[in-house]
Image 1 (cartoon, helix red, strand yellow):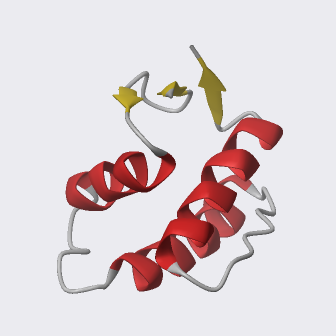
Image 2 (image 1 turned 90 degrees about the horizontal axis):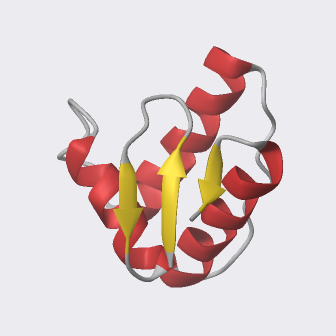
Length: 81
């Protein structure tokens, strides 16, 4: 999968989990969070900064990452390439 983050134009590629891991790596000051904690933080940031509600579901980090990418695509925060 390949997506473009609409806010900054970054193109990310891989599985949804790999894409979210890259997003986590690039997020300033979020190094201490686990991937699951980062996803929760990213959902909150989207709500606060863009007023977009992302409905992320899943039990595992991989499920939550896939759900986050789906929601980003659904709401226009990212686009599939």
